[in-house]
Image (cartoon, rainbow, N blue to C red):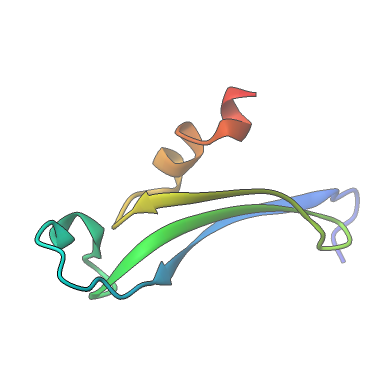
Length: 74
């Protein structure tokens, strides 16, 4: 429904369960109150996945995810 839109990019937290990790504080999404990994996706106008970034942990701003993504580097 957006004229001249060829796709979209967004980030979200995926909840994960950490078993027996002593370094779990790095994975904690403070505002969400659960352990998480950030996922960034880019889709085209047909909602086909064009790019996925996974592996950034915890509570980080979208800008930090973008700055560390391979898509920005490309």
